[in-house]
Image 1 (cartoon, rainbow, N blue to C red):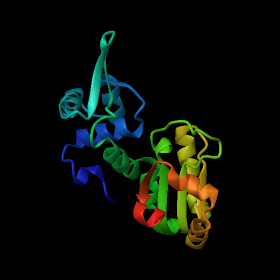
Image 2: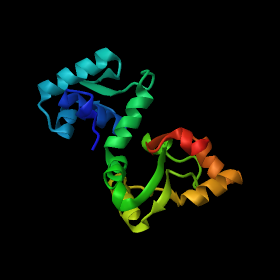
Image 3: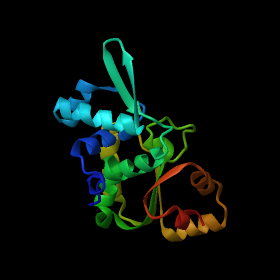
Image 4: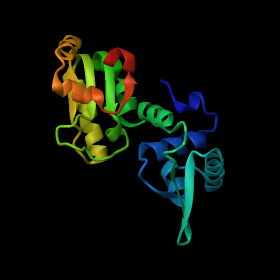
Amino acid sequence: MASLSDIITSRVRVKLLELFFSNINELYHVRGIAREIKEEINAVRLGLEKLEKAGVIKKEMRGNRVYYWPRQDYPFFEDILSMVAKTTGIGAKIIENRRKIGNVNWVMFSERFVKRERRLKEDEVDILVVGDIVLPELASLIRYEEASRNMEINYTVMSREEFEFRKKRRDPFLLGILSSSRIMIIGDQGGLVE
């Protein structure tokens, strides 16, 4: 399976990026980070220093602790967010279990879902899956993620035929999904929206 370690040689920096970009709204301090990623504190400090110098993360002193979080103005923020969404959590599980899930054409996460932000509307879709899907397999992955996030995930599954039909008919529900910001987990955006 593809991993950030395929392109980033530092194991600690990979863990740091996965931690920061799995929950971008969280602030972390050094000791908490070391506990979370199970690495030596000096290696964590060195990794944080390199990521800060590169502009990937920010730091701020609060009381007697230094807190770190990802910079959303970093030029590759969205790219890292997309890579981490594919290598951690439910994104990684879907890719890893792709054959068990069925014949998957596209899997799209809403950007709000990836950023762990609240839905604007109750009927907003977190995950769109298109293909010939084995629903019980997908549902078990979704339930596992719901338990780890402690929230309900709103997902929609369509066959490719239903998806193409709805797209041609300019179905408002589908157009609402396609017009929102998204992170592609499987498949390409061009094929999804053209």
